[in-house]
Image (spheres, rainbow over the protein chains, first blue to last red):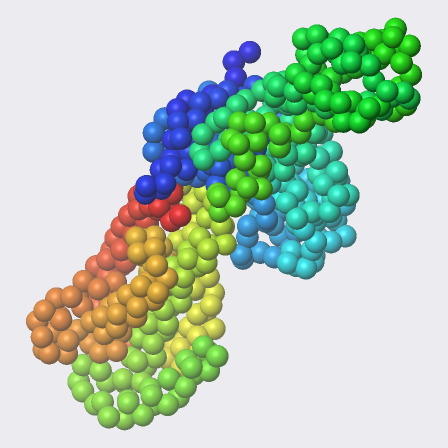
Length: 320
Length: 232
């Protein structure tokens, strides 16, 4: 199946600032693509170009069968954007915002009445429909934004920082909604600077920094590609013989073994879930009882640090 | 507040000034002034949409509007008509007061005049949007609108007949005769039987051209300046 979005050399310059630098990538139909990067990485500029809100300086993209430069009206018909905040000045209640959006999307009066009610009820916003949006919590405001795409039902949904400044319960609720949209066949582009969010939601993650695409893959592969990214701390009941350390070092996935204490070793390795059973077997064979074992996998922050030499917080400070 | 201002203009300035003016061309300056004041107020209210553009840009509403599944043409037309309609609704009570003060009207003429005022209001909205997206600075827009208001309103027949403007300076007269405020004011006065016009179709055509040009120019400029990311 051809990709639903094909980005080809997409570039945007604002004066001397290169916001997006020759970005090329493809997005498959029905996937959640996480666009991960610190503030200033070029994520928002990229999605605004895809949504034909701003014109690229160079390069182009096709959305569905349509080129964003040649058929912007058709492209907008396929897309819906969930912004960070409901962006309306002249209407102020959730009902007004969603109803106005439905009207612009061409829903008939009857259908609009029915669908607005359905969607606001599904999002538990029906009883808050007459409140001023400014009086709502961050999570509720985000749900109002989500309601727009649920009304519109576009093929592709672009979500910009969906859970910024939202509590944990609210985050999970929004993540479930996004997963449900994906299950219904919607392609989702998730722009975020939250590593955990990108990790748990995305089928693939594209990491951007300073307008450039650093790497694009499934989260597991990205993490596995960091040499020695997984760490296993093993506490033994007695002192670790040097022979075992040497044997561990012979595993091709093991990058390094440190003897932290006489009975405690730390193993830096890749593909932890495949190697740990073999490590356990080795200790059992050598009759070395294990007191405890602690496994820590690399995060996408480690992936980001691996490619940029910076943590995402450090890059954020540089990007702002 | 605007209504109080409007009523004061009529009850104070209009009544007092009409006692000073006694010329053949304007037998009843009070009615003449009240009609002109309605058009001036409509112009000021329709200009306001330009300030909304800056507010929308500041709050990121532009991005939302530009991402909607509608064409740019529909969007600009919607904004112009919306801005014009809002101005009309806003000024509606004042026009109502004017009609009460002016007195009897010829229903057909008044409907034509009302239609012209609608188009005038949409055209001013389109002009305001066009200038706002070109200028990109709310402070400069504010100053320019003040200057434009002074020139457009004063070089029109909003407050005095064309013959007097012409007599003061032929250039002023030339500008006033092509001014959309003149077209709107003349049509409103014609529709309310304050003045007679040799050919009311000419100012009506002027208002239609004004509306069409600024709506079309608005679409092109909006597209070029906004979609290109120029507001960022």
